[in-house]
Length: 150
Image (cartoon, rainbow, N blue to C red; front, side, top):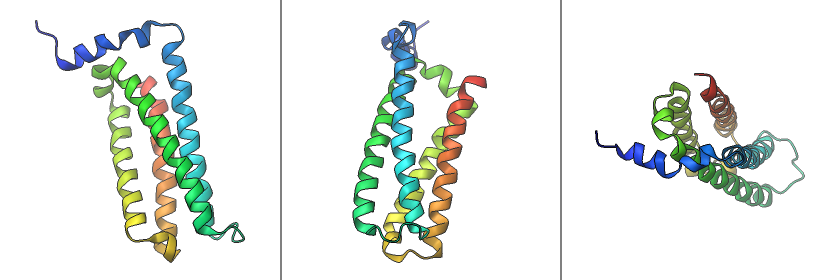
């Protein structure tokens, strides 16, 4: 029986799972990335909702979105490594598949938010988009935790 590309990928990254500290360290790095991402998004979203009006929106947005992007990159890279170590298992896991769909939805919501220049408008739709963003990201986190139990 010929190994599939997923089997080959998993074999290549198998040491991540077998080493006593490698996979847990990746999980910690993943959580740090999520914290940087979500913490800074929520900070900006609170400003969109009118909290901290004394903070200049453009300055806050530049800082918080820059850190959020760094957090996303950390989470994405660590997540890709964790995925590579058990690709077939994760693709068969309903919580993982839902998490990936939610990540795509979060990206679409962010593109819509910035594409319509919601930071300049700060209207009801901008507030709704930020609420939707927070809910999506909380669902991503919940699915990420659920992966181990499905």
